[in-house]
Length: 264
Image 1 (cartoon, rainbow, N blue to C red):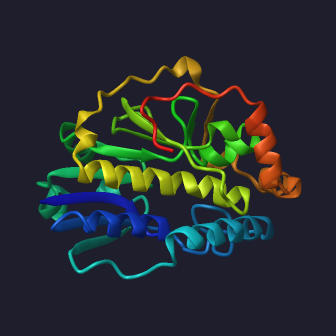
Image 2 (cartoon, rainbow, N blue to C red):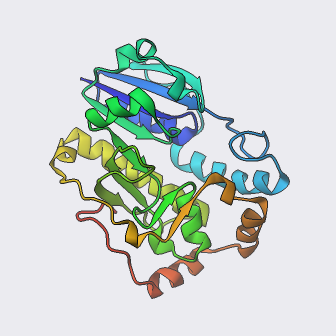
């Protein structure tokens, strides 16, 4: 059995690759590489003192849940490319990874051209870190907390489509509030998504879900990376949210409608 994963190179991405490698004979991992020091190095996110401070919190939460960067299992065959180069690759360069039993996309850049057609045809599954159709785009769980809506922190497992985060949904994954910080709370949504997906792939339950279309009328925010500015990050850091704040907000919130059975 073979699986192909299109993902990134951060600890959470590498952790997913290793989890899938534990249940598949061969795992093909196409890793899109960005700096592992966002905020300190100019890359997808700008270099600034505010961004450095923000992402120090993110990295601390990520490493606590997924460990640091590490080598992949022996059964993983990886190909590393610069983020954004994915759509320039030719079929011949990915040929070995194009006849797998299952395809997963998590944290990859926007896929276009022949590759998106191939993945849609193969019913590739995407992990969207955010609750669709409510929050779509970039840094969705950050924006849910920014909006004082922790009830909208989570992840959506859906079929890949040509639209960003807009494919038919399979289920939602929700984090438990057993965290030491709001950063860990949002990172736990990634953990819930990964654990549930690997579990449901292993039992083949993932193939029993009936895809549900997204209703864009329920969208609260659609965000781009350019929306996440120093000013926005600084405002969030100064609020210094505590678990007690999140608990109070969750207790008072009207919970969003989720696909059943969601993973908690």
